[in-house]
Each structure stands twice: as structure tokens, then as C-alpha cells.
Image (cartoon, rainbow, N blue to C red):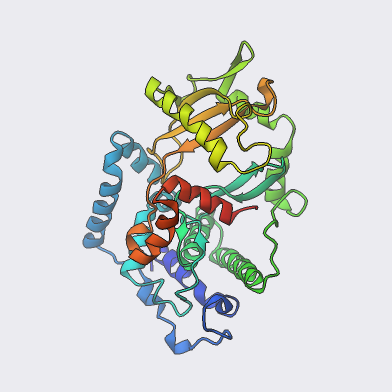
Amino acid sequence: MGRLECAAAVACALGLLCAATVAPVHAGRTGAIIDTAARRSLATYLLLTGGTRQLQNEKTLNSVNTPLGSTCTQKMAQMNISAFSFYRGSNELYYRDLYNQSIITGSAFYGSTATPWIQGDMHLQNAGTFDIDTGKVIYDLNDFDESFVANFLYDMYRMATSIVLVAWENNLSDSTATSCVRSFVNYYCDQVNRFYAGTASTSDVLTSANTYGRIDDLILGAEVSDTRKKMLDSWSYVVSGTRTFDLTNPDLAPVNATERSAIGAAMAAYYTNTVTKAGLQGNATYFAVQDIARRINAGTGSLGKPRFYVMVEGVTTDASDDRILDVKLQSKPSVYPYLTATQKSAVDGPLGGNDAARAVRAYKQLIYK
């Protein structure tokens, strides 16, 4: 078995590890008894191989990425760096394979009602540090482009596979990779059970006070007082007391007048309707736009999507506490073609089919409240 095939098998085996803890979230189940005979052979989950699959993959990736124009070549080069990079940039293949092989619905641990908001592209590089509206720095999920309401197994399998790929990329043993996968699964399922039992707190967050090791170091580094100024200085410079994006930075490009006007106008709707924090909602002074630039060369799966950085005033008129907002065009998530009409309308209906609103809703459902 090749390593990529093994990664898929490991991911799909996750259901065997969490039967006892996930069972309560399935409607109609009163216990965690799973009929062993019902468990599908892992051979079922092995990826198809050969020329036919290669052609299928090329067709799928071309249909998704050719519209990116010149960025298509750049994205393919980025995906070619490693197996994990390819995995990050090919979420469409992930959902296609799960659907074609009935991996989700065929799992012995599938439940038609086990459909929370999922992150949709849950892998090890879709989490990081950021400060929330109280000023506290936390470590949490930070990308909701692919989020939707769907079966929880989509997130579990994708994260587990990423753990295996990153472990191999860092020359860790298979036993270490397996241990990491088990730790993830156990914690995930324990947390699901806490929510099911009503004992989980929606305000539980990872901070420097309750983490250790590399995560603790990462959060502490972000908490250092001059971290924000260093970040601001890496993207911009100050002219007559006002921050301006540094367009000599290879990851920034200028915007045209139409883009600048449209984004500037949209900001009023953003801080009036989307922002809900008291003191920030409707705060035209805080969100006063200082400058706008196009963000390029960012991400892997989202590389090529229209994306902008917007500099806003922040708490004071001093340039040291300005804020950079990351504005990115939202489209339908990769899981969307494989959902039923009922599943789609459950999200699209209340949100009017607005994918930006979908990403915002997912953010509010999935991280610190």
C-alpha cells in the first residue's frame, strides 16, 4: 500500500477509534454498541490507481483551477511541493472521493443527524493565533471558506489524514503518527460528548495560561507588546501619521479605483451589520479605512481567489494600533456538489445563498463565543 493510500485508510479507520464517544450524538442510539460485522473493510477505502484515476484528477483540478488564469500555474507549483501541499490544494478531490466511495454514509459511525457546522477544510495549517475582541490572544481555527453544515466525519477524516501527512513530512514514525491521530480523535469525541451532555463551555479557549510546549510558545510570542507593530511594519509604512501599504512587498499589489470604491463602501455594511461586539458595531471611527491593497501569493487551496488587505484606524488615531482586515471572496465550498438539495437549502435559505454570510456564521459557530 502506498503512503497516500495508507493515509486515506488511516483517516477512514478513525470511526473505529471513537465509536463509544460519538454514538450518543446519533439520533435514536442509546449506547455505543457497534456491530463489528457492519464495519466496512479498509480495503474499500483504498484510492483507485492507474491512468484512469490520473485523468479524472487532472480533469477535476483543471475545471477548478483553469479559471484562475496565470495563477493556475503558480497554484500547481505550490501543490507540487509535498504530499501535504497537494492535499491542501485539492479539497475537491477529497470530497469527490469520499462521495464516490460512500465513505461517509457507509461508515458504521455515520448518523444522518450528526450534522454540525464543520470547518470543511480541517488540516493542521488551518489553525493559528489571533486576538479576539477582548484583546486576549487565543489559538483556534482560522479559515472558514469551506465551512458548511454537514456530517462531522468530513472534518475528522480530513484532519486525521493531514496529521499523517505532516508526520511523514517531518520524518516521524508511523507509530507516532498513529498516536497523534488517536489523541486528536479522543479529544474531539470527548468534546462532542461534553456538548451533548450540556457540560461544555462555549467560552473555553486555548490561551498561554492553559497550553504548553510549542503552542504555548506561539501564543506567548503573539502576546508580546511589539508584535503588532512589527506585523504592521512588515506590510506598511507611515506617511504623515497615516499608515500606507508598502506596494514594494512582493505579496501586495495595488487596487484600481473601482475596487477601492466598492470595498470602502462595503465597510459600512460590515461594521454596521456583521460586527456585533458592543463598542465596535457601528463604530465608523474605528473602521475608518486608511488604505487598501490586493493580497497575492497567499494560501494554497484559495490561491488565486480575489483577496484584499484593508487598513483601518483601530482604537486610536495613533498608527501603532491600526488593524489589517483580510477580505477574501467567498464561493461555494468543495462539499457543496455532494450535498442533497435539503442539506443545501438548510444553510442557503436562511442566509439567502450568501457565501460571505455563510463564512461569518461558521466562524461564530465554531470558535470562541
